[in-house]
Image (cartoon, rainbow, N blue to C red; front, side, top):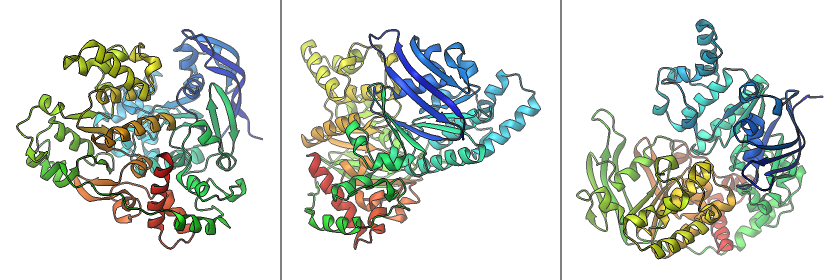
Length: 567
């Protein structure tokens, strides 16, 4: 029998500044070598649960503890962050917030330097850890020069170099493209199997986590554990959607087709999935769906004409890119980390100037316009919220753009409150931004731009770090904004978002436009999926497995049906 490595017994925790406990009566045992996924809506307590495991509670976040938590047989409230870090290694969702060294090698070696490890031993351990995560060829590179996936490998190596028995991953997929996310899950699984580590993953993108085998899914809601079972048992129920957590798309499709789900069907693994009678039900459902075409927007708003850009003459970031975005359109820009997607947005806003080519807005070349002049019509929400925030309080941050534009106080208050309600932040309106999570900060930056009602809105990873409830609230608000005439461009790694909310996508890889086409075409075309670091949608895989005549049509039909239900 495997020994327990983490044990919560009747555990309660209440933050010092709060009136009631955040965690209530937690009883949970995690065993050696297990791979656990913890999911739950924002504010459910899952982050607090992870902070208890890595020692941030109570040694950084002060509060009252009742009950017992032991890690590797030692009670944590009598320990310290430093001591707990010898047993639990944490990889944060924002790798940039975890870097210390000026080079990859220095960063990986940081913990060893603190422990005064001899330099020859240190170099050997850094080499071993970097090889394990396949980043050994970048040891002399500065961390900020790496792609999102590479940065994550560095932070993981920095944890592995200490040879800790437990690894805690806080939303490891939040900033990764689909293919890199898939590789990250495979890497975590390899480390778990080869190094005999206990793995705990906190993540909103459950379908992507389930790419590799998971032992248990733990669902947290309102500070309590409401489910703790195998993925097959969890997926056969409706508990995920009832709790506000997005279930895998292929599971949703099976439910739409009224297929009876059973844990014996191997629901967690599409390759092993036993469809049985569900095949006929899927085919019948797909044929019954109304397949009306969505009318195409035809009036151009933004156009790129043979645009090139590079930081130097020797290295081009964008190579002869041309595309058109129409008025009132909601469009996705997708592709691998470092492909040039964010560079496109910075060119539109005037942060960069094209090396050659034209950018047209409403038929006019915008090259003469300043950043300020463009900001009157174009709003942008950056991927990293810390790069946008300049005020201390949430209300002041969201109101800043309106104050600069001399909007009267009464209107400012009304518009800010309305936007905060939509973004799920109204209850925190007088909070300091420093007290928010990464995902909540993201919502603040979205609110600060949405409140200005821009003609063109560009969002770089708008839903990263958001639970399904807030993801849906933000996207439905954006959809409403779009229906009133605002054109929206979303730069995203979230293929669910692309399929659910946009009709067209621009696919970028290595600075080149690979395609400008319907979204369902993107995730069913291997000639786009591989070079753009995307991932075939599970809907397509399900349709192929079910032997449907046209898997691509099935994906298209699902999208239309799903949108119809939400409307």
